[in-house]
Length: 153
Image 1 (cartoon, rainbow, N blue to C red):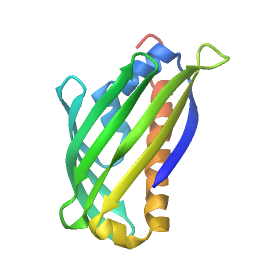
Image 2 (cartoon, rainbow, N blue to C red):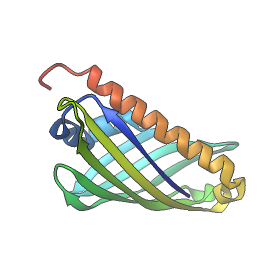
Image 3 (cartoon, one colour):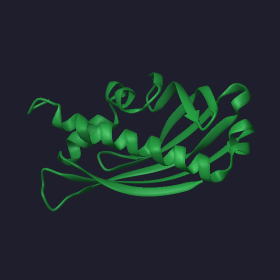
Image 4 (cartoon, rainbow, N blue to C red):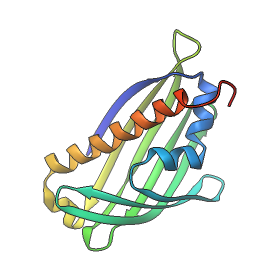
């Protein structure tokens, strides 16, 4: 499964970068996220509940930040096990580009992921639809989080 998209975030690049590296902000924006804890610099322990069609699963895994080019880009490597539901692993390349309006940032991402187990048996259309919904939900919450912040937070 591969996917790419971009969003305009209503904040300058340094502010968006800080939010993308803040575990509390990310945990609040990831639907179903039970735990996102930094174990060491760039290494995170993750637990989340996911629903894909008729399958509900709790995934536990790791997330690593690679190729960090602060404050404009990094690659996220993720691996998770969901018991009988299967596994998911992949890469997400994230980049931040200054927008014509200096108070906004263009956030671009490219994701490639593999799944196995029961999830893989559901069919690519259902899995792709669930992945798109998760990404859309994340970015909707992430962009909205900037509207909810105090001016100099």
